[in-house]
Length: 280
Image (tube, rainbow, N blue to C red; front, side, top):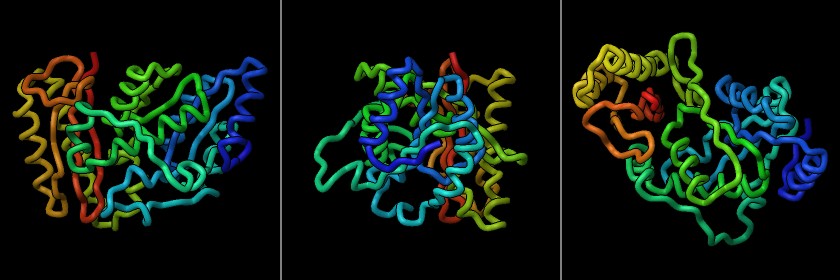
C-alpha cells in the first residue's frame, strides 16, 4: 500500500492500473477511520484496486463548526486501510486541493434544502465540490459511501446522474456499536455520560422503524413518537427529526416506499445523526 499526497501521484498510479485493465474502487473519507469506514473499504474490494482518500475538507465546515478539532490520525488510518486491503491512500493538503485561489464550485438545490442543508447551509456545496474533484482525480469505476450520511449519499448520487459522471455510487449499510450507537468519528468527542446519553438516537430510530414495520403510515405519528423518545434524555437537543422522500429529500406526510427518516441531535456540543430507510 502506498500513501501519496499529490494529485499527480494519484493520476500516475491509476494510469498504470488502467494500462493493466484493472478496475478501481474509491472510498472518500475525512479520516479518523472506524469500522464503518472499514466496511466501505471491504465493499470496494470487489474491484481490482482500492483507493482511499483522507482529507478533512475545510470547504464543508461552517465558521462555528469543528474543522480545527476534527480528529486526525494518519498512522491509525493507514493501519486500518492496510488491514482491509486498500492499495493507495491519497492524503492531500488543502493547498494541494484548492491552491492559492479557488473560484469554481459544484452546487445543488432541492436535495440540499432540507435536513442537514438547513442547519449547515454551505455544507453540501463543499461536499459536492470536493467529491467532484476527487472523482476527477481518481477516476474510479465505483465509489462507496455509508448510509449513515443518507442525505450526502442521495446528493452524490444525484450529482453523478446530473453531471453524467462515468462511475457507479454504492451505498453501504450503517455500522453500529454493540449497544446500537451508529459509528462516527465524532463519537470520540463524547464524555462517558454523553456517550450513554447518545444511545437515545438509536432508540428513537429503532422505535420509528418498528412502528413503520408494524404498519403505521402516518409520518407525523412516527416522528412525534421519535421526538418524545429523544426528549426524555436531558442531554439531548433536537436539530431535526424528519421524514423525506429518498430521491428529492422533500418532506412527506404518508409513508410509501422510498422514504428516509433522519434525525440530527446535539448531545452536549456534539451533533450526531442517524436514520432508517424504507427503500423501493
